[in-house]
Length: 263
Image 1 (cartoon, helix red, strand yellow):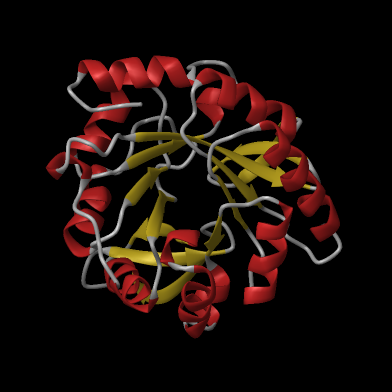
Image 2: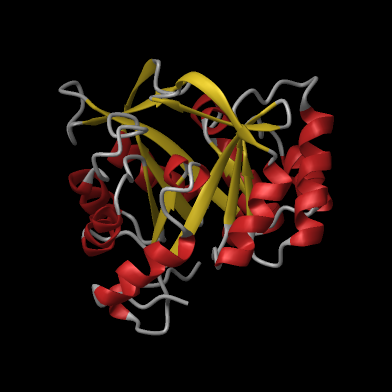
């Protein structure tokens, strides 16, 4: 399997700006540290708005991902894929290669896998073997912790439950098993709008030979460039876009001014 170098080593690889839509029962929701979720709009409309603003990709995270809600999710993915012409990643509740096949059938380009891979790491290899590493994003919800060698621990249930997994070791294992990208979300920073966890991004960059998407903490325009300088290949944000505080164009302009290459 070939791994590409980090964006800074190859001028042809533009930095991606990715709006993330946390979806529950067909609506976009947003909270701080995954708590106090509130309605933020219609996912299909929001995705189209972000596509028109110049988003490089769209990520849907199905935060309820219950079996009953699955039909709603497939409909939402299908409607979105008909209106946007950039990669669409869907995460939440992906537990088997059949789930991936159904999501791809509805129009998803990539899937994000999180807790199911922690429960059964073999799932990563099964998905990569059947659909290719480029279709598989490992989503990590990471917290600072003195209990692991790297100082960061993997959590589940939106950061409410700590596992025993060291975040860096788990990322390395996931890449070896076939994950083509890492979506690294800092639970400590999530929703705080105080900036990305740069130490976490740097650690992931040094330890993973696949693209790293930085998530959690974006609040101002000047938060994005440091994440790229720390080693992220893409930046992901949610509430700053949903609330209309920043546009995709604003972020791309700020990144370009910092010397990053954007599309």
